[in-house]
Length: 126
Image 1 (cartoon, rainbow, N blue to C red):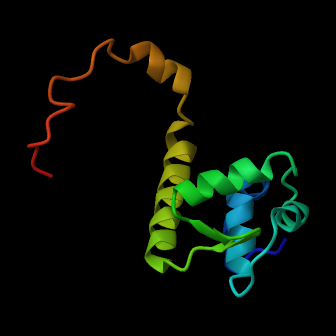
Image 2: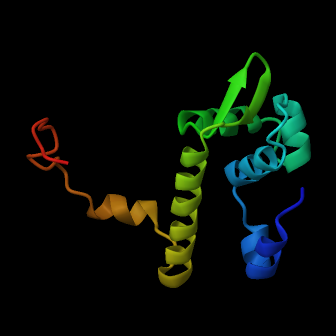
Image 3: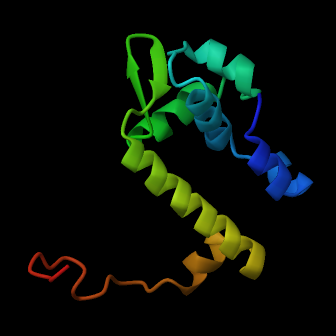
C-alpha cells in the first residue's frame, strides 16, 4: 500500500508501522477513491485479517467514514467528515506522542459510580 510522500518524509518509522486496521483500510480506500471493493480484496490489499475485515468495515461505517452497497465498500463521499476524522486523528496522535497513550483501565478505576446529575438533562445549552 502506498502513502503520500509528505507523510513518508514527516513521520517516523514507528508512526508509519503502527497503523490500526481501521487506518489501513481508510488509507487504502482513500487512495482508491474512484473504486469500490469487496471485503476480501480490502483485506488482501491492507494486510488486515479476513476474519477481522468485516468488523473493521462495520466500525468505519458506524462513524460514517465508509459506505457500502451490496458486497462492495468505498470511502465516504463526505469530504468534510473525512477531514474532521483526519484532524481528530492527527490531534490524538500528537497528544499521545507528547503525553503518552491513554489507558482505558485507568480511566475505569477513576470513573464515578454514578452519572453526573446533569447527564440526562435535555435542556442543556450547547
